[in-house]
Each structure stands twice: as structure tokens, then as C-alpha cells.
Amino acid sequence: MSFNIGLSGLYAANKQLDVTGNNIANVATTGFKSSRAEFEDVYSATKLGSGSKTIGNGVRLANVSQQFTQGDVNNTGNVLDMGINGSGFFVLSENGSMSYTRAGTFKVDKDGYVTNSDGSARLQGYGVDANGKILNGVLTDLRIDTSNLAPKNTSTVSSTINLNSTAPIIDQTINPFDPSKEASFTKQFSTPIYDTQGNKHIMDQYMVKTADNTWKTYTLIEGRNPDGSDPTNPLTPPVASTMNFDSSGNLTSVTTPVVPATVPPSVTTSPDLKVTGWIPGNVTNGVWTANGAASGVVTVSMDKTTQYNADTARSIPSQNGYATGQITNLTIDASGVMLANFSNSQTKPIGQISLASFTNEQGLQPVGGTSWKETYSSGIPGYDAPNTGTLGEIHSNSLEESNVNLTNELVDLIKAQSNYQANAKTISTQSTIMQTIIQMT
Image: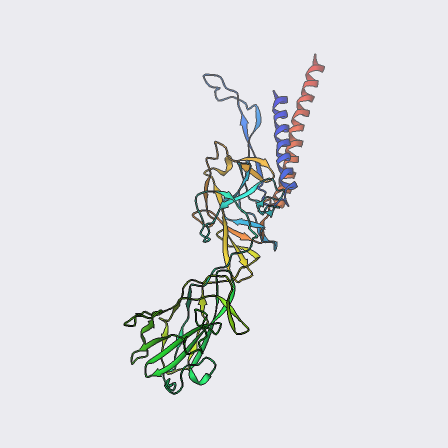
């Protein structure tokens, strides 16, 4: 019997050496989780019990459990290197077969898909619609689209403006508005706007104080009326909007004549200016030439305009149009949203990384390549965005290192060696006893 007990001890010590050696071998493996050999004693028993004098039959390997503790997350400088700080697993799909990993060493293949380091599986996440809205709920292959960002024509312009209440009044009967004469207007503001083909145009607003608490605004694009006509031509004069302020300097109304005029003249009263009839084009040899693009209606918000005793000035305007852009770089935030930055100063989400969680992580089956598969024991995966619920956050430009504690493993190595030697001594002692018995006969 002692031979079998000693042999079981040798087997157990050998398995402990195997597990410890595997941990040490993977001390530098990204996302690796250390394992622990767990043993249980062996007793033989009859159907009615074994009584109180039963001697054990040795030891056996009960389980090799992986320890899903957090590894150190260290910076690498590569944007597609990602570490998870907290719980959860990256989701990979290889022709529809799902696997799960903590190793965030990703790259882009020739088709723009984000894959694992050997290119065999694609990273899963949530796609976006045409407006950049994340489509949660349906996993898809994440892809970095390097095509140009289509231009968008300007439809809204907004800014904060103050008009100096002490500015001199301009008598337009004597000094009519003329964009070429600075004396005919109080202040000029310029704003870049874009047509449907991404061509940039300059929209100029000329502020003219015509009476106390009353200002007129003339809007020209590329020095022309919105319809492309010459504002200096008496037959096509620019159309002015009138702004009225109360005694406290607050804007009360913006009145804009409707073009073409009706009888009686029709006006709109709103805090917005509507620049309509805009025909994108350029002046060539004094002739206005359309460029084939469309414009739509540009709404210039004036509701943040005041008239106080301070310099006439405007904050930096904001407008929602832009030219075509090429992707310049990629950033990934803590919630896994992949943001593409373009050469036209636009930023657009192109996807969001999804993480998987399991009720019993210990039940996952390791399949190599620092990956695991779902099993009956692990339970089905739950998918969600990083930083949601108990899921950890994504650290881009970083990788999670192995959680192997090398000092502990070296100590375990010494202990396993001692165990092996001790069990070998058990067999050696039993052999000596057997030899003594044989010699007595």
C-alpha cells in the first residue's frame, strides 16, 4: 500500500512542478493568468463506511484553477494596445466562433478590421450609424474605415456678440451701406461656411447702428448677395435685417424682410437670421460663376446678441459645416469608444469595444493563445460596454501584464521539489522494509 501512496505523492508533486513551471514560462505573456494546482486526499471506503481506523490511500490532483486577479497595466505607446483595468474579457470572433481574452495586443489587417496579434480572429464591438451614434446590442467586427469623411454644408452659425451702445449713429441717407467703405458700417464679422461639396466660403456680417437701440445687419457671402448678385448694383442692393434692443441692452427682436418682397412687404421676426438663396460660386473677371454645389439655408443665431457699453466684439463663432477630411489618428477612451480624428478638425466615433463577463470565470476553458472558451460551468457570457456595471475600463496605449508573482512561483518550485524528494523517500523506505522481510524468510 505504501508504494501506491508514495507514487501518488510523486505524481502530485510532479503536477505541481508542471503548473509552477508553466506559470514561470509565461511570466512575460501579455494577459496571462497564473494557475494553481489543487489537491485532495484519497480514502477507500466500503458501502457501510470505513470506520475510524482507515488510513489514507494518498493524494490526487483535484483541479488546476486559474487566478483571474488583475495584472499590471503598463504604457506601450501603441493606440491599438489595450488593457482592461477591472473585470471582463475582450471578445474575439474567428468565423463566428467566439473566444475571450485579456491580451489586448491588437492590430489592423489589410481590410481595416481590428484583429488579434496573429490575425486569426477579429475584435468584436458595436458599430455606428451614419450620424456616428453607437448601435448597442448587436456585436459586429470592428473596422477602422480610412475613407475620407464626406463634407457637410453649413446650416447653423452661432456666436455671442456685443454691440457698443455708445457707438455713433450712421445716417444712411447720407452714408448708405457700401461694403467697400468702412465709414458706412460700424463693425464687420467674418465666418467661414461650407457648401455641399466642402468648398469654403466667407460669410461677412456688417453691423450698422442706425438709431438708438436699433442696428441693421447686412449679410454677404464672398462679397456678394446670397443669390450671387452684386451688392453695389443699385438694382440688387443687399437686404438688411433690423435688430431692436430694449433700454437694458437686451435683444427684443430681429426683423428680416422676406425675399422676394410681397405687397404689402412681408417680414419675419425671430432671433435668427435666415440666409436663403445662397448660390455657392466665385467671381472670375468680375463675373459670378456658380461652382455646381448646393447650399441650403444658413440659420445665423442672434439670440446671444447684446447692446452694452463695451467694445463691439464677437466670440469665436461655431458652425456645423466642414470640408472633406482624411483620418489622421485614432483615440480610444475608457468606455471603449473608438474616435477617429480627421484633417478637417472633426471627430467621429467609428465603433465601441464590447467586453464579456461570466458568472463563473473559473469555469472557462483555456484554449491557448491567451484565450478562453465558454463552457457549461462558466455560464453564458454577458456583453456590454466597458465601464458599465462591474466591467472594467479600457486603457488604450497600454497592455495588461501577466499576473504571475515570480517570487511566489520560485518558492513553490522549492516546495514541490521537497515534496517530490519526500515522497521518493517514502518509496525508498518501503523498499528497504520489503528487503528486510525477504531476508528473514
